[in-house]
Image 1 (cartoon, rainbow, N blue to C red):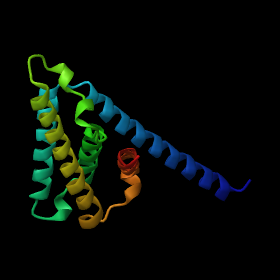
Image 2 (tube, helix red, strand yellow; image 1 turned 90 degrees about the horizontal axis):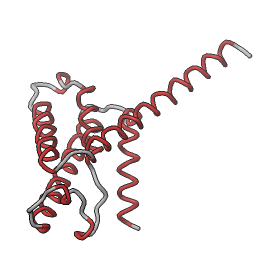
Image 3 (tube, one colour; image 1 turned 60 degrees about the horizontal axis):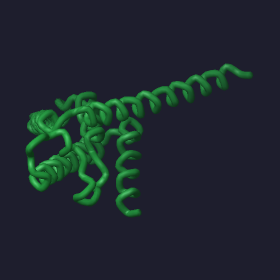
Length: 152
């Protein structure tokens, strides 16, 4: 085998490691969201919204911390749930003494906010900063999965 072949193999392995790490990062975000009660979820989304607003209010796109943006996108993607009928909304069982209708609306509102965060963050990533999709590929795959589940 040639030295060029070893270099190509090493690059391929490094790329595989990065894909695995990003998938694990998304999985951790999903688990973190799943383990939060409704109040923690509201606080979490508010914090992400503040972070994104701070990024968007920078004087220049060059001042945006792309690692922080990627971290924010992974956190928001972990908070996204597939759309489902009102009777299947999860998260309300954690609140005692709260009407199901009010809780369902709160959970639906949180999901709207998460979708807005992802929409704005991905547009910033792709169309304003012109960053590569490979760094957020796990997020994009997760979004495709949610869309396919909704359609079927």
